[in-house]
Length: 263
Image 1 (spheres, helix red, strand yellow):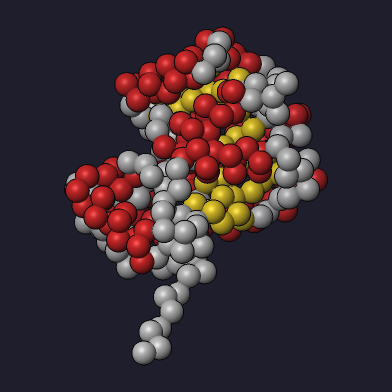
Image 2 (cartoon, rainbow, N blue to C red):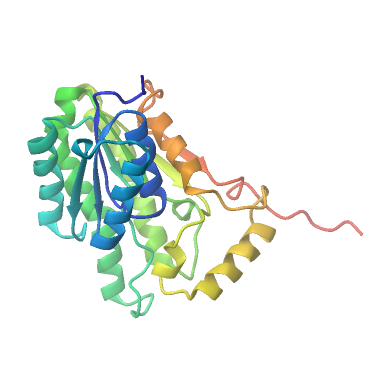
C-alpha cells in the first residue's frame, strides 16, 4: 500500500528536476499523475522513467505546453478530471529564473518571470479549487530561498518567489474553511539544469555550484531532486495539520554566515 493509493496529482514542470522526481515518487506511492512540461522530448523521458518504475500507462497523463499560456492551465485541470475523475493534489512546481537572451532588468524579463512563476500559479490554483474542495485535497507550491534572500543578479526572480510565498499564506486563510491545505517549499541549491536554462553555460553553472557549495552551504553540497520530492510528499500527505507554512530545505544556507577568523 502506497501513501497515495487512489489519489490524483498534477505536477507542473515535471519534465525535469524537482518536478520529474516528484512525479516519479508520487506515482510509485500509488498516485495517478498528470505530468507537464514545455518539451515533448523531456516529457517522454519522464513518461519512460515512470514506466520503468512499474507505473502502468493508464495512471499517467501528459499535458504539454507553456505554463504561462492560459490554455495550458485549463488543459491541465480539464484533461485530468476527464481522465481520472478527480484532483487530490496540485504541485505548482513549474518556474523560471530568467528569460535567456533578455536583459535581467528588462520589462520583457519581468513580465515573463511573473507570468510563469506567479500568474500561472494563481490561475491554476483557482481552477483547481472546486475539485480540491470535493476531495479535501491540498496544494504545494515550490518556491525558493531566493524569496528570503535578496540577490541583485536576479531581482525579478527573487521578487516573484517572495510573492509566491505570500500567495500561499493568503490563500491558506482563504481555503481553510473549504478543507484545502496549501503550503510552500523553499529549496536552496538543487542539482538540476535550472542554471543552464537561465542562460549559464554548463561550465559557468559548475563553477557557480562548486563555489556555492564551498562558501554558502553549511552541508557543503547541493540537494538532489529526490530529496525535495520526499519533502513535497510529506507536505502533501502526512502534514495534515499544516497550512500556510513554508518549509525551507536548503542545507542551512539561509541561516549561514561565515565565521570571522580570530587570528
